[in-house]
Image (tube, rainbow, N blue to C red; front, side, top):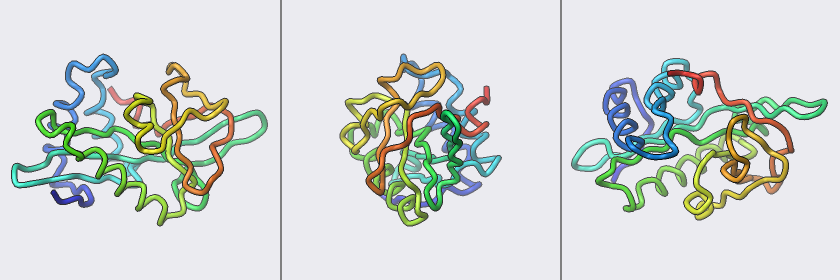
Length: 175
């Protein structure tokens, strides 16, 4: 398997992987392909990776800027020099799930984000899966419309994210 940066030529294959990976999942909103398209078109993905093997594209991961708002503060998450970023969408073609593709994409993404100086990464997802990658529930961090138990973070430099409300990149409102 090869991990590499996503390119414009990957757009249709990425859309197909995202669509297939989220189809029928109870956590899926159905907007995941549109979100990935909007992240890519806007340049909102700080890191956008794909995984491919002999059969073609088998996975993708996008990491984008978030902002955290709290009483009297606002942290801009440009992903460099202290910013927090979010993982999502993370997609693996159904026939390649449970084969380490998602893990490889997360690890490579973390490596690249750390090199950029990011403070850490947030995700909205299954604590059992993401907990294996170091994600934990941070105290007082909220994403509107999401039960707190699914809001997870992994710090890269030791400090958890501050308590507050997370605002995702505008691409996450795509439909």
